[in-house]
Length: 168
Image (cartoon, rainbow, N blue to C red; front, side):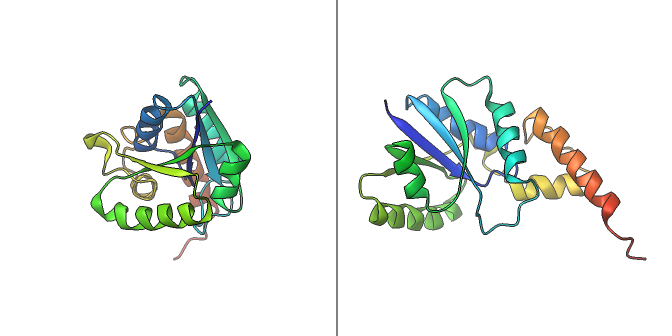
């Protein structure tokens, strides 16, 4: 069985992520969405929340499993017996960083391949960071994320605003 890991912080998962995931699941027998615990990014959603959101958003896609992980990605891939990693590329600007990561992972684990996939053109501009900012400013995010994520993001940001002290 050929298993692939699609790693990321997914804070939150977007329709661009889902497009890349859907493309990869057609190539491999099983796709593990690896949700990073110890990302250097400060996340809005907890690890458990991100895992649950992804599970809900992918429940209709066969052969997808969602698992949290911490530590080195290559160690997680070995544990899962994955043959490859999938990384999404939205723009040329993503390539340099992703290429560097792929080479480092290859040095750490020579038998683990990295495959780059691009989302559909109409999804290339979507990023989790931009979606959170649009939502924070009251914009419509329904075109950018799955419905369950839109609900969770609005709720999370509304409760965060209620707990922030008034700057006045």
